[in-house]
Amino acid sequence: MPERRGGRRGARGGDGGNAASRRAGARLSVVRSRSHQRCGGSVAAVSPTTRSRPPLGRCLLRLFTVQGSWNYERMQGVGMGVAEEPLLRDLRGANGGTTYHAALARGAHFFNAHPYLCGLAVGATARAEHDGVPGEQVERLRAALCGPLGSLGDRLVWAGWLPITSGLALIGVAFGLGFPAILGFVIVYNVGHVALRWWALRAGWAYGARVAMALREPVLQRATALSGPAMAFVVGVALPVVVRYLSGGFVGWSRGLLAVAAAGGVALLWWQRARLTGLRFGLALLAVAALAGGLWR
Image 1 (cartoon, one colour):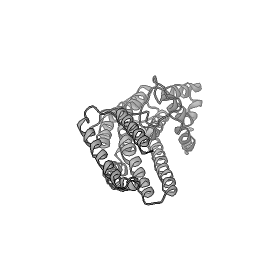
Image 2 (cartoon, one colour):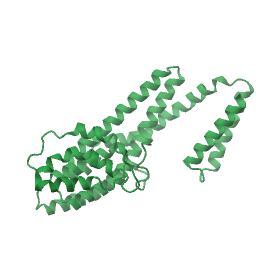
Image 3 (cartoon, one colour):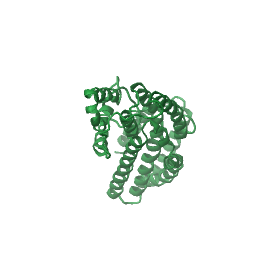
Image 4 (cartoon, one colour):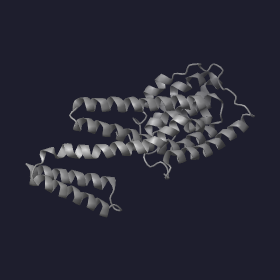
C-alpha cells in the first residue's frame, strides 16, 4: 500500500507548513480553552495511576502499521485506534472500564493526515483522555489536527526529505558508488523518518491538548523553512550529473538525437502544463521509455 494515503488533506498556501501551524494554533486554542472551562479552570486527571513512563515504544511500533487497515470510511482511523491503545490501558480501571472503551472508540474514528506525523495526534489525544478532557473536545482536537499534519508532513517529507536523500543517492550512483549509495539512501532516509515519527509521538504525549505548541517548536520551524531550498539545491545538482551519467552510452549522432528529444519533451511539458497530471506524466514517461528501448535494440 502506498505510504501516501493522506494526500490532499487541506488547502495549501504559499507558506506551507508555517501556515498549517498557524491554522492549527487557531483551532487548537479553541479546543484547549473550551476544555479548560469545562474542567473548572484546571484539568482533572481521570486515572491517578497513570504511568510515569508511558509505553511509547510499543505505540511507535504500532504506528508503522497505521495504514494497514486503511479504508474509505475512516481512512487511517482504525490504525490510529490500534496505535493509541497501549497509551489508554491505564484508563481500564476508571468507571468500570467505560472510560477506556469510550476513549478507544474515539481513537478509531475518522482520521486522515501524513502517516509520519500521525503519532502527534495519537500522543496528544491519549494524553487529553488521561487529563480528563471531555470526549467532544478530544474529537475536535483530532479533527483540527488532520489538515495541519497533512500539509506539514507533505512539505517536510514528500517535498523535502525524500527528494533530498534520493538526489544524494543519484549523485553517488553517478559518481560510481553504486550499491553503497543505494544502501546509504535506505539507511539515511529511514533514520530520518523514524526520528520524525518518534519526535511526533513524544511531543504529542508531552503537550496533550496544547499540541499546537509542538507545531511552533523552533526546530520544526527551521526544518520546514530549510526543506524547500535544500531540496531545490540537491535536485538542481543531481539533474545535470545524472543526465551526464545516463547519456554516457550515447555517442555521435545518437547523443544529438537524445538532446533533441529532451528539448522537445521539455517544450511539450511546458506547452501542456495546464492539462498535465501526475498520472499522465508517468504514463508518458513509460511510453517514451518503452519506445526508446525498442528502437535502441
